[in-house]
Image 1 (cartoon, rainbow, N blue to C red):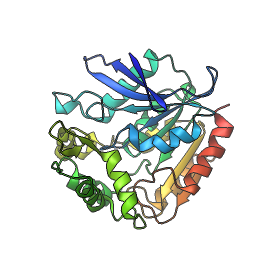
Image 2: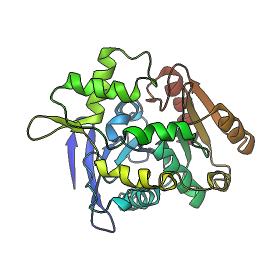
Image 3: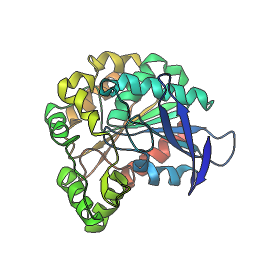
Length: 292
């Protein structure tokens, strides 16, 4: 099932347990173009990648998948299914259904954890990956901050109120954002309800597994996962103010994976939007090398 909408085509795929998973499919210049698959963070959706998708669709097909419980994908009646392994399974199912082979992965935060698991399981199936502000060590302070707000949001009446909510949760990560930036940020985070109010565009129940046991959000022994990825080309993007990915972890990643390229985005925390000049230039160079 598909529907042309703005610059993308809406795609849906049924999971093996009967849920409908949605993706925005930006077609690219031709059928032979490489595919970039974007995987969002814990509370986010395909809208996070709008700028990136539009920027690169003249040279690549770009698919931004919304995990169960987010965006237009179905909510899961069993919150225990909101975990990284299940999201990986859903993603692999969609790639198979759409006939996508050897894509480049772009994973933000949780999407980066998914990317690492996918690469470790079958590195030859991917041209490379961009890991956005995530690595094998997730800093406890950042994880605690995320646990403090996930699933806590209430509907609001106006977009200005939505922008204030977005700023309250993310202000430290984007100290240079203007009021206009926060309004644009809110429009990616919230959706309009039938009664006209605005609510965060994810199932609040995604917080249940995270709050019950943080290990369901961060798989154990991620250094072993990272090492299993082999020599697949990697680009690591870190926000200079990140409380999730430390500079020490980046250094160790580079020691273990000598071909890893890294770029730091100044005055940005977790996680860069990937429309920053430093991030965008690094991704452009990376894709020129691996997405041929």
